[in-house]
Length: 194
Image (cartoon, rainbow, N blue to C red; front, top):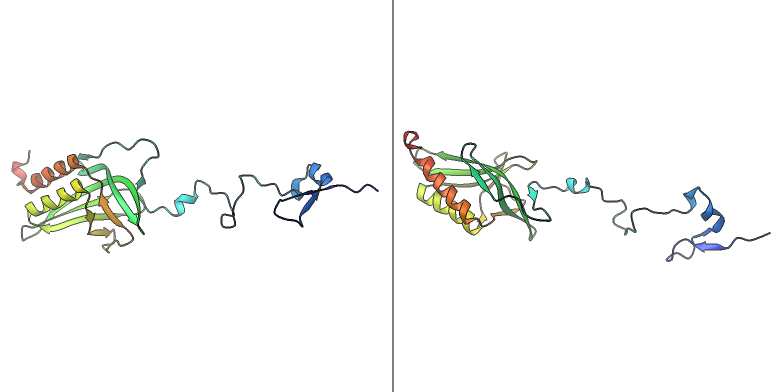
């Protein structure tokens, strides 16, 4: 009786062999071939395109190639398109961009508050400034956008403080000037706005 020669199934295992007869067989249940490359102990399954969605924290990541269109302000909808900002979680910085709505409110003491509220996506939060006198508000917002300063008042949609991450605007001197002018324009009486 002919004894079939054995082939090693894995290099690192001395006890697992497979015969040539089984290897030639169309039924591959004995061969345990794996598609998709070798994986370690931790990653048992293939990482599909949905894997990242489980851990998505909101905001659009910067594209791998090129960059998004520059930020622009649309006063008719009070929206900044493609506002770039940096999110820092556990010391890891990530460039993001999103559309933000702007709302300016004025209280009875003639102090102003401005909120940049993220539009779209699962995570909703606002960057808030104020209440300040008009000139102070202009200077604070201008410095935050122009110099990329860390934002202190980050508020969730439910009004609670957003503490999961640290945020700052990406430096944009041109946008800073536009927003500064817009804040001043909104402080004027309705009749004098043109």
